Amino acid sequence: MNNLNENDLRELVNRLSHQHFHKPFVDVVKFNNRLRTTGGRYLPAKRTIELNPKYVLEMNEEEVIGILKHELCHYHLHIEGKGYKHGDRDFKELLKQTGSPRHCSPLPSVEKRPKYLYKCQSCHHMYKRLRRVDLNRYRCGKCKGKLVMVTHLTLS
Image (cartoon, rainbow, N blue to C red; front, side, top):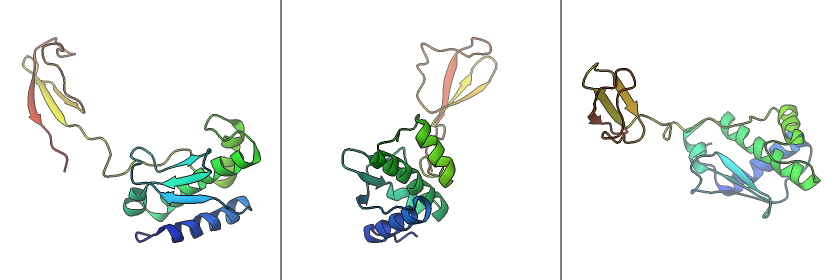
């Protein structure tokens, strides 16, 4: 599935639409390289499904199919004039009926890892943080001691 092009993607979406929803997919599906925090999205105004190509490269086929089924739930409910948003009952019921996931798994390359490591000078408690901490403003949560940056962790 790593070498999936847009024509193959269109065929896959149409096959999934017939298989799980018993309806054709007649609109646009494409890759969107700018998607960062999600596996895919449905744009109701354009009736377009967009897929994050990183999921095709880094995740297994089951995850990609789950993302596409989720977006097809949005698509078919929108076309039928039913509730297609995440909070709508129609949407939640269709997710269950089709075995579609509510959320996609995070990408292995993007999973949040601590970037900063701080140590209390008094009790030596270590703090891992994603963001920088203002050392003049924050103290140790255990003993109120002064914090110092031990290292700036790099992502590997």
